[in-house]
Length: 219
Figure 1: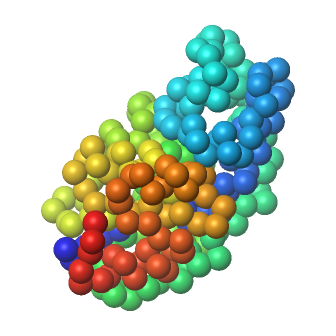
Figure 2 (figure 1 turned 135 degrees about the vertical axis):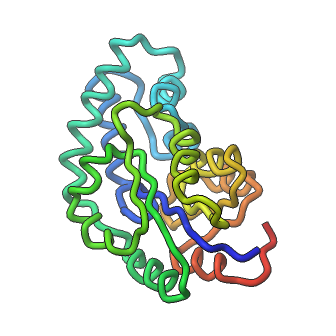
């Protein structure tokens, strides 16, 4: 299959904020007096929507007040940590290689759109994308409908989604497009979950581009 277009995920894929996401979640649970979150637990249980993820981490159905408290604590901690997050070291090289191959690319993020486009990390690579969609205030906090709207805007292109989470894989499959899982050395998806998904996996962003440019694909 020849891919015309890559839809890149943002958090954890192009932006190296995996540690910030985990640390902010740990801090939120600690401040809310809920069970301790471990890195392994985060990797095993991550899903969307986020309230469902928090229920899984807590091992119970949380009240609306507990969910609100967790979200407030998370946003506070993540905002402080985000300033330290950088683009993945190979992000620019991967985006450049895909562009130089004459293909197009876009960015789809679950981060609020107005905040996303103002991030200095995003502004470094903004010129690579034909389209950028962060979350809007009136959208569902699930990636599948968000991706579906994004794909509609792209029209008739053969698309590959590249992302680092189970959510990316499930959204792409639901929308009927190909997906590659980015699984770096410190992933947010456990190795067990990654290998069970039945999709191609790349350990680096340039490797993802090389796979997408290949003539023969096994998945």
